[in-house]
Image (cartoon, rainbow, N blue to C red; front, top):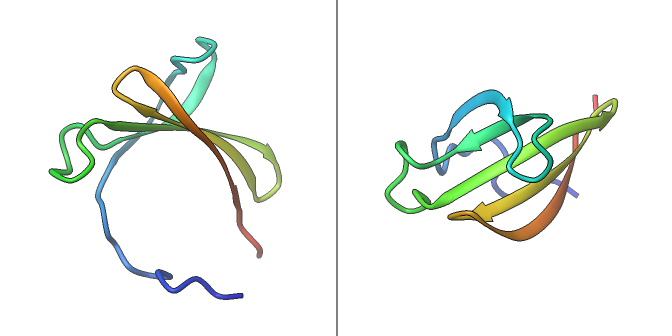
Length: 74
């Protein structure tokens, strides 16, 4: 199944490595606080757990609201 949003740049984020709010270990942060009017209160944290597979957490403010997975095929 192909994504309907493939290639669409809907919401811009600052992306960087930083300490996770969950366990203080390094994570990839997607921070929308200064880049999006729509999602300025959202912060995603993701970690690579296997080739092409990331697990993530969504924070709304400082509150954890959702877990998600991203799978990329070569």
